[in-house]
Every structure is written in structure tokens, then in C-alpha cells.
Amino acid sequence: MTTDETNLPIFMRPGHCAGDLLEAPQWKVLAQSHGFVEIDAHIPDQVLNPRQQLFGGFTGTYVDMVALYTIRTMFGSRHDYWITTINMRIDYLSPVTGPRVRLTGELINQGRSTSLVAVTFYGPDGEKQVYSIVTLRVIDKASN
Image 1 (tube, rainbow, N blue to C red):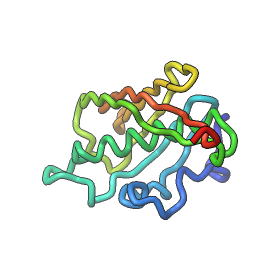
Image 2 (cartoon, rainbow, N blue to C red):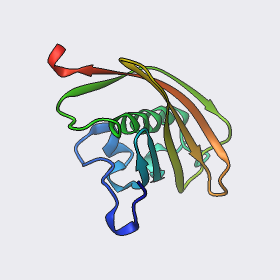
Image 3 (spheres, rainbow, N blue to C red):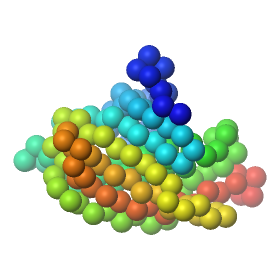
Image 4 (cartoon, one colour):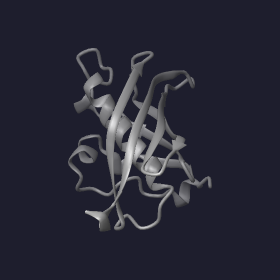
């Protein structure tokens, strides 16, 4: 399901410490479907290194947030489950300089309780800047 500019879903509401640091409530969801999301995000000044590139330590925060959102596209109410990150591998292909970056999250494999999601950062010319693989576990809240 692709959305138009006038009806973009909210990526995240204010009030989440990592999301607020990355200013995620301002990100635009360009497209989303079952197991897929495409995001237009900006790189705020507070996460830049002295070379004005995305500091590598914050890359994982972007990856985690997009991977979690990708999994949420496959489920209904968020009140029924938790999602936890089990593993994350990040390959830095080139510096992320911003000011904007396109991020995609794509379900690679879904098991009974764990899923594998690829998160990719694309630069202004469409070149891949970061490629990551994230393993996430979905936990039924009723079982805890």
C-alpha cells in the first residue's frame, strides 16, 4: 500500500527517547505493506560526527527502529505483543551524510517466533550506504 503526501502514516509519536533524539516523529512513511516499509528521514545535527556524517553508533538506532516498524506492519494491535531485537549486523558501505536518507525495511524470513529483516540506507543518488540484517523475536504479551 503506497500512501500519498496528504495521508502519510505517523512513523512514531513523540515521547520515545531514541525516537525523539533522531526526531523520528518528523520522518515520512513513503510506502508500507505487509513486511515492507520505506521511510524518508532526516539526519539531525546532534547525531553527526565531526566530519558531518552520521555517527556510526547512531546507525544501529535507525536500523532498530525501522526493523521494528517493519515487523509491526504484519500485526494488528500493538497491545498484544512485544518485539525484541536478538541480533543486528550492520555493513557500512559509504558515509551517510544527509541531510536526508531513504530507509527501507523488508521482511526476509518469518519463522514461528523470530523474523529476519533487512534495513537499507539509500543516499540522494539511490546508492546503498548501509545494509543491515536484524533478527527480531515477537513475544505474545499473554505468555509473560
